[in-house]
Length: 205
Image (tube, rainbow, N blue to C red):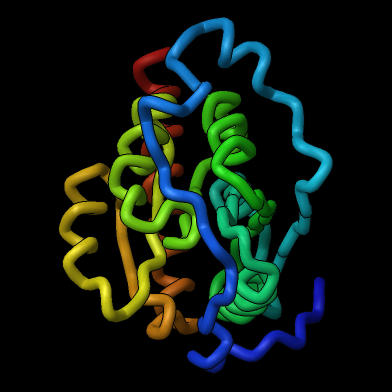
C-alpha cells in the first residue's frame, strides 16, 4: 500500500499549468483498426501505481478481485499527488483492487484510449480547458466502453451539462472532491463492470 502525503485541501487545486485546448481537427488520433493495434505502447512518462485494500476479515471472490484500470489524466504534478491521495483514502472504505496510472498530455491519453488500456478515466479540466467536452466525445468515439469522470473548476458549472451530453459518466468541481464521493464512484463503476462481464459471458456462452 502506498503512503501519500498530499493534502486534500481545496487550496491544492490552485493550478499554475498552462493547459492545451483540444482541437479535434488537429488531433492525429483517428478511428481506425490499425491505430488500435499500434497504440498499445505505454509512454515513458507514465507513472504506474497499484492500490489494493481489503477490509479485516474480508474474503476474496472473483467479483471482489475484479481490477479497475484507472487513469488520471492531468498535466499538473500537484493534481497527481492530490488524486493519488484521494484514491488511497477512498480505498479505505471499499475492498477494491485498482491499478492507477497517469498521463500528462492529450497524445498520451488518446494513445491509451485507442489501445483500450483503461476502464475509467478521471479527466482534469487542465488537459483541454474549454475543449473538454469535445475531448470527452473523441475519447468515447475511440472507445465506447470507457467511463469518463470530468474534474472541473467550481466556477465553470456551465460545462457540467456539456461534458454530460458529451458522454461523461460524472463530473465534479475539483474543490469538492472527497473520500466518500470517490469511493461511491469506484463502487458504481465496479458494479457496472461486473454486470457487463456477466452479460458478456451469458450471451457468449
